[in-house]
Amino acid sequence: MPTEISNAVFYAAVFLGVVYTSRILEKKWPIADVPYGEFRDDWVAVIVSVGLENMLAPLAAISAAAIASYAGLGWIKLPTEGYWWYVSFAIVVVALDLYKYTYHRLQHAIPFLWAMHSFHHSANGITFITGARHFWLERVLSDAFLPVMAILFHIPANMAIAVGFIFFIPDACAHLNVRIPLGRYVTWINNPQWHRIHHSVHPEHRDKNFAAFFPLLDILFGTACVPKPDEYPATGLVPAERVDFINSVIWPIRHLRRRKSQNELSEAAPGAVPPVAGISGP
Ligand SMILES: [Zn+2]
Ligand SMILES: [Zn+2]
Image (cartoon, rainbow, N blue to C red; front, side, top):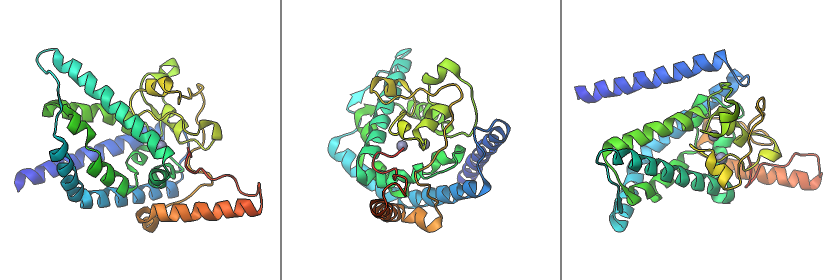
């Protein structure tokens, strides 16, 4: 259909424009040098994960619809008249951020979830597109079984779009390989330096800076590590791992097998192998 085609062309153009702009910024003010091989691996990982997620999205939607019809949708009807729209909007943003924060902490604490989430952390060089690098089953499962926000809140479509847009900025841009000197404002909104600590290879940064939008959540719940002005640590898993097409598909199996063999090696020769960033990895 012509409208669908023109919509697809429009979104593709916006997507390419955003990616291209991010590349210009990342070349001009990079935090770290990301070798071409890392960048290519990231693209492969993103294409595999987004492709499989979209293929399985209808299944996730069926499951989410079944859960929603059982639980009921929109338990809380937020007021939207006049300035109440903005109040309700703020409530939804804070609630979604709390939900994302909690889920992210569980992804680091529960071995089953970490086995998948470690795929995101396996990126050794972080760039804008690393934001889309998530193990495919992770998104499918959370879409299928956790339609929490839709169950909790009844909100108009324009508010849902506004919430999606406002989360895109700190959430996706947190992976930009761009040095943005925020000074003391670094704790105000999620940003590349704040989130880089979360991906850091250093043990003191492990399980820190989970927030998607407001770093305040990390401060409140004791998981904050405020970076020093020039603190931009190296990123990735310890020991470093690389992904290709096949292990983008079978990541948890490959990752667990590798972790097991690393543990056996370190038991055989203590100190010879650096500790694996395991369940509570960066
Ligand atoms: Zn994480
Ligand atoms: Zn990340």
